[in-house]
Length: 217
Picture 1 (cartoon, helix red, strand yellow):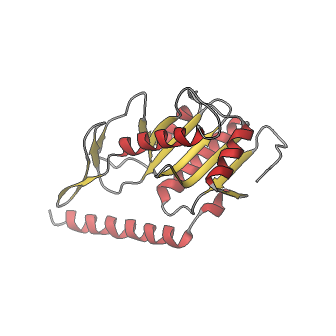
Picture 2 (cartoon, helix red, strand yellow):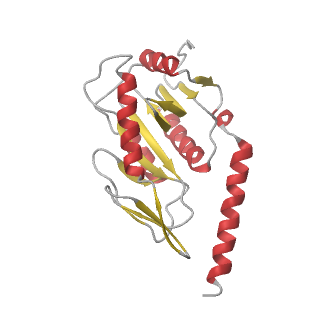
Picture 3 (cartoon, helix red, strand yellow):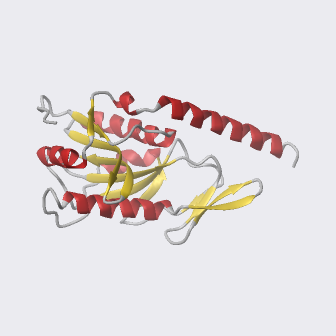
């Protein structure tokens, strides 16, 4: 999977499996927009498995490696660094996975995979990005130095935050090959549109149900 760099603005996208939810796609679009503005080489790994973990997005530039856990919540969410998170609906709260821990696990798993390509002394950065927005009424931690948590507005800042671990373009290419990722020419090619359309219809149904329920309360 060798590709020559013809300009400093080259963005390479490599995919494990097609994206199947809008939060991941929204994060990909936000990341791609920032990288285009930075006008430097970069790699984006999309929806792949590494060291027993599934990772939504991993972004590589000359100055940073960033693992992104993409989330899309249709109902308000509360959560801290420790303990389970809760999603709140009209009939009470439901325990959901702690996204901070998911991002942290992905960060460690990616570092372990990188060590098979080259020795690194530190760790990638990590974040939980909630897209397209954080539901009104949510109460979430902003994370810490290990994992940052926020909405899409956080993407430009965290992408320009240097990480302790860094790879060269050639090392990124080698890592993609080692993971068996597919090189994608266009960012829209990562979409599973059938699943995304179903996801969109589910959100519409959920919103309609909530509006109907609230009209009787």
